[in-house]
Length: 410
Image 1 (cartoon, rainbow, N blue to C red):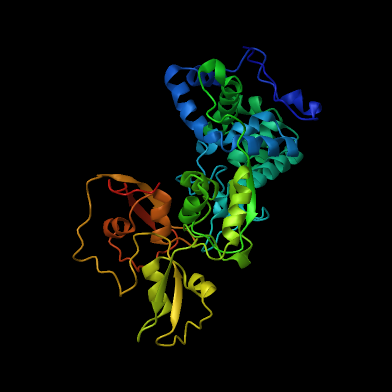
Image 2 (cartoon, one colour; image 1 turned 30 degrees about the vertical axis):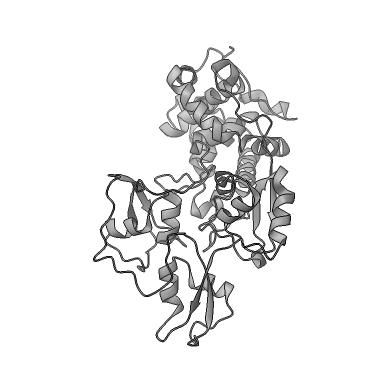
């Protein structure tokens, strides 16, 4: 195999001039190529590829649409191992690892319903635009893609300091961080292996390229109930709509678009159009003396405004005896009867250890964090010395326990 393989540029041959590996081969590239063609790493890549197959056809189409190097298709391997729910230590999230402060101008939002950094459709569009803009400034694809890792401002300073727009020379001069120096060689190695994956025993599980479509819903739906009604595997709907903080989609008036297999679009439209079909789990609550929307929001792990969106109520003037429709985000949530008391509750410690730590971000609740890590909200509360109705402070670091053995999310 030739080590001096250029980026495959769509209708931009002039951009190839500085996109080649050094003529004699690059040691980092060679090291990564040997690594990813080893028996152990091929198994690892094969496991990631099994999930990547759901996204690669979509990303490939976007890469062609934006005229980016073919290798960009495989960039989520480097960024997130193709996990739409991936969260880095710094808080970067999704397939393309966007930070909270890096989504402005990319038609992405974070609110009580969604974190669209985990929306593979919107995040892919945003990543394409970001890399393309980097190229418009730096005039070199290696630099443009590497700037996706270190930031455009940082790359511009390195180019100015180094007096060159050659990524490889900047690496040799030690002007780029270790992570950014390894970024392009790692991407090239992964790309070269996956382009010839059959040769390395990495098999396609899908009989044909997987196709997604977006569907505007006439009513909010519970992903779990929709899966049962349509026969679509739950994990597919979960994976395609990872931006949801709850299993319930936002109210129809928000214009939320459900991502689903293209060949199931008509089935979904038919099911969601039938008002007699139950597609959302709700608790019907009768307001009692002393009740507040705040108490209900804490109990159900949803925001006050979310309750208001399903009910035409004044939070400061609840009428005793009136009925409230509460969307249920978790099947284990029991009807509200007051604040849950953890003092006499015994935690399940059969699954010892912690899945990691999580820094609380805007819009998070313990219920949404429990869903993200597939664990139990009561365990999060217990191991962090919190109550279920505790208000989480942005930036607070929580210990996330591993899921109890008897939990079934799929």
